[in-house]
Length: 186
Image (cartoon, rainbow, N blue to C red; front, side, top):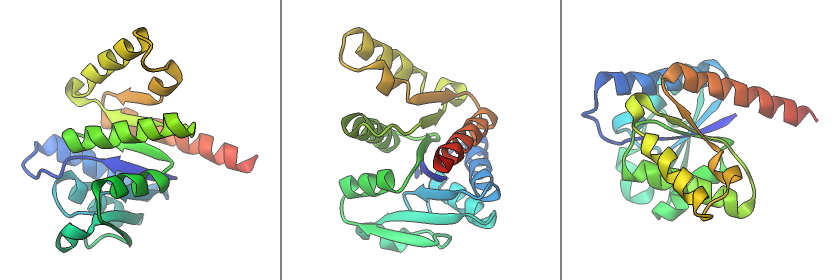
């Protein structure tokens, strides 16, 4: 399974947040999956990529040409891009599932881009958000409001799964991997 991970590039985050990224990276590698991410050696991107690589995962980094000097040495494959739009598109096209760890505006932009693309092209892929300490809970309220007002449909908004901790997130990913395996056997 190809797992896109969206997360913060900030380095000064709490240790528990960094450990979540390392746990996810290890899980990806130990379970034979591929990491798809922003390709840089900063913040949580560094943590998840290094852990995934150390655990044997293929690490696909989508690296902006303007930041080539910051590409992560653990990347097995580097896809170069010129714009943020291209970066998001490449990550979406090379992923089966999307995961959001702690992140800011860039992470939200990536999640909403993936959700909008899936809705427009009717290609449903799961989106899982690590909702430690209710970081992303206001998003549930927003999605509910959009559905109530007829601006979004439940099939699209149900693609987002909130996971309260890293254990529930990796369990949800394991279930998704089983489903993908079963569908590929058909």
